[in-house]
Each structure stands twice: as structure tokens, then as C-alpha cells.
Image (cartoon, rainbow, N blue to C red):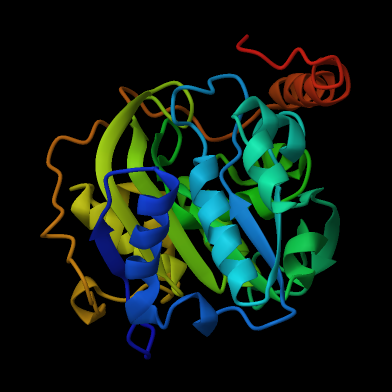
Length: 323
């Protein structure tokens, strides 16, 4: 188990209103030392939201732009230089962001959006050595991970660790589904090792409105009224699984982090604001049926075709709409 006590900040937050959200985020980060504990003047700071898809912009499938805006503003206020990036399965980071209403928010701050490019990186894992990861993420001075609380039809839940799979560029994600997806434990281990390699400095979880049921995109919005934050992404995920009343063993990313000794026991985590018990939810909807994780070669080829069609035809023509 990890030796240094992890701190997970959990608070109630009910609004995406810019001023109210900013105040909530400052309250959330205060026991962790505030944003200044993570960002120094001149730091290049990657903001990594969940930019899954542009196909369902009203269904809370992605991190809300208001969250990214407020965090970017806080980074700028302490002299950091924020930029936003992700590696969507379909389309570009910019295209998915624009389809989800990000344009006015990023333009107001002059926030750059970057596309991810891959490079091999040495890792401490013998099983998953030399992972292909985003150069933009690995070269950033600071990485702030901004996931969404969502159910997931293959992995039960997608939280902070799974969000960092977006730092695997391009169609390498589909390859991992084909290579490691036949074994849920192995796939979960790959995701945990990816998160360990990226090693985000801070994770802020958007749970004001989550996405339950047949996620990551086929479910429905669910108001949770919560925000979470930690410098330890594994501890944050463990806490959120607890408050959603989901067994850690059925969430491959959490189970893998426990096997690898990356995740603190719940009673060893410091909760300076609210605890998972204070925020307990007993009726969160998981997927109706868990789907296989593995992709066969035909699915990989179809996925690749869809990705390139969206990125190079639909997005340039302004056709990224539901469908």
C-alpha cells in the first residue's frame, strides 16, 4: 500500500454558474493548498478534460466547459500558462470541444486546444513497458486531470484513472482494446499503469451532474451535486466508488490500483471536508449489461474509419452532430 497518507477533498456543489463554481473550486482546493500549491508562475499546465464525443452535447457525456474555464482562470491567476488537450476516440479535441459548447469559454481566456501526438515512454511496469503516451501530456510542467463521473458499459465506472486513457493518442486506444481487452484484469492494469506514468499533479472530478446507466455516452444525466479533488488520482477514484455504493472489485481500474499497491485503504485517506459516507448515494445506475472490452480486428478497422471520417470530413464541414 502507499505509505504517504492521501488527502481527498469532497464537497457539495450545486451550480455551474461561473462565480458560484469558482467559489466552490476554491473551497475544494483550499485544504490541498489551493491551486498555487500545484502551479508556479510560468508553468505550462495541461488541462485534461473528458472530451469523449460531440454526438450527445446535452447528455453530460463530457466535462463541462465551465469547469475547464474556472480551473484555467485559476491557473492564469497564479501565473501559469494553461492549455487544453485530449485524445478523443472519434474526431479531434477541438472538434469535440466545439460540439459541446466550449468555443466562447476558450476564446474568452485565449485557452489553446492541442491535439495529442504519441511518443514511447519508459515505465516502471515490466508488463506494460514503453507505453505510447501523449508527448503534450508528458512534457507539460503540470497536468490537471478533469474527469466526469460516469457509468461505463465496459468498465462499470469511468473516473479519474480512466480519463487518463485519453493521453493514449489516436487509434492506439483501439489497439489496446484488441491486445488487452480479453482480460478485464489486464486491461484495468494497463489503465492503472497509464495513470501512474502520466502521474497527474491534480485531479478535479466534475460530479455536479454525472452520467449514469449505459455510459460512457448512452446513458442519461444524473445530478449528484458534488466535486472532488486530490493529488492522488487512485485515492480519489476509491473514494468516489465508495460514495456511489459500487464495489471496488467490479471496477477494473480501482481493482488494479489495489492489486498494484497504488491505492490507499479507505480508512487511510484523509477527508478534510466531507467523507464518502456524508455523500452516500445508494441508487446510482450502472450499465444494464457489461459489454466485452476486447475489440476484434473488424471493429478496430470500423473504429478507425469512423475516427478519420469525423475528423477529416464531418468536423471540417461543420457536420459534427448527433448520428
